[in-house]
Structures are given as structure tokens and as C-alpha cells.
Image (tube, rainbow, N blue to C red; front, side, top):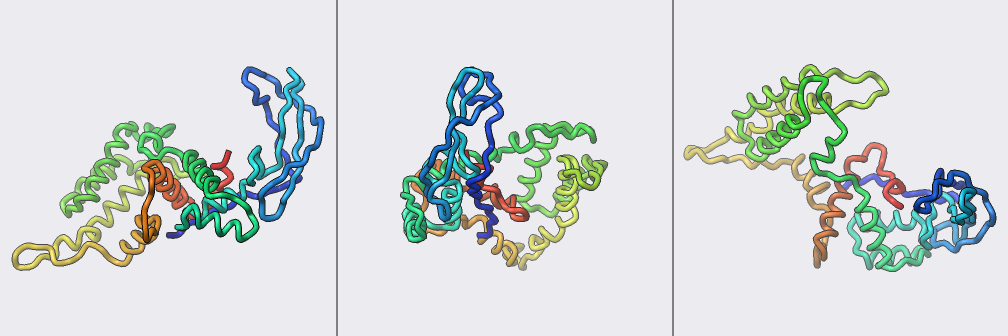
Length: 279
């Protein structure tokens, strides 16, 4: 499996004060630092950091502000990130506990489990409705419902892999053919991504279905549909976790961790910032 994960950093001298009082019903937006307090921390470099007790100027509520990479928890976000990374790479909760303890970071396997599940819960939804939420393709006259239907058709064609479906792909591609390329510095919108997706599938369809034409005298296929690229993709993504003795114990763990791995796989270029998924 190939992943690129960026661990959170612990910066003891960098504080980010809240923009609004976290107390429910309090509209306060100004805070006065009152007292520095020490906080014991489980971390690879900083066994202790300093936090600030701040008073809300509106109603006098007192809150604590922690440095970057530190929360109200005893374990730093960096250590929790290391636990998540080791678990995604195949270690069990108990094995992660042993590795981190041997490096001087005391963390129990229950804490490892909580860190993994907490990060998995923050992964954006991977359903088609959520992936396309907020995007519209009206600029080229294709409603969102039609785009979802085209993606469903593509999924069906990939599963069936019939050579005669190339004409269907051409028809779908022509719906998005007028999508313009965004200028430099702008992200590709959904319409342009859909255009590239269906153009790519349409052009490559004869090659992707070529093996379907290899048949013996009885009309049976004689060429396996798998190749080195398929095997590599299976090794990187489908074989998500190697378990010699067991698999996942809970369906929620399988669902959450699978989504987290898939989400990390979409950030290979710049790396997935685990700090963005940690509360």
C-alpha cells in the first residue's frame, strides 16, 4: 500500500485564540489572557507545554487555549497521528502500543483505537451525492442528476466491459465536450473533470476491452483480464490491510478505516494533513 501522510506538528510557542466564545449562547469575541499553566504531555519532543487560561470579556467565562498540536487531551496530536499512520500501514492496536512505548511515548491500545476511529469519523462522505454536493454543471447544460446518472452508467460499463459500449461513452462524452479548461491558478471544475474522464474512457475503451475478442474455437475467452497494472492496483488499494490471523472485529472499523485509506490515497501528491482530521 502506498500512502503519504503528514503528521501534525507541536509548536509550544504558537497559540491560536478563539474568534468566538465556545460556551453555548455566549456571543463574546474578545478574550483576556489571565494565567499561564503547565500541562504534562505525551509527545516525542515536548514532555511539557504551557497553556493559557483566558477570560471572555463578555460574561467572564474562563477557557484554556493550547499551543498548536495540543488539545485538552494528554496525548499530543503528533503521537495520535503516528498511531493512526502505523495502524493504516498494517499494525494491530496492540502492536502500535508496543512500538510507540518503545520510542518513549506511553500510549495504550485503547487510546490508539480512539485516535483511529476519531480520525475516520472526520473523513468527508464518499457517497456520490456528497462528492458532488455544491457543484453544478449547468454551464454546459447538464444537470447534476444527469451527471450522477452518467457516472452510474460508467460504473456499469466498467463492470460489464463490453466492446460495443464505446458508442455509449462517446455519447456521454459529447455532453461535456464544451466544458472549458480553467485558467492558470484555478481548480478544474466538475464539468471539466467529467469531460476528461469520459474522453479518457472513450479513447481507451478498445484497449480496455481488447481481451474480450480473444476467443478459442468454441467461442470462449482465452485471455485473462488481469495484468501487471491491475495487480499493482490491487496491492496498493484492494489489499488494504494484511492480517495473518484475523480481519476487522467491527463493521464500523472496516467501513471507517477503508474510507480513511481511500481518502489518503487521493492525497498522494501533497500528502494528507492528519491535523485537519483531528479535533
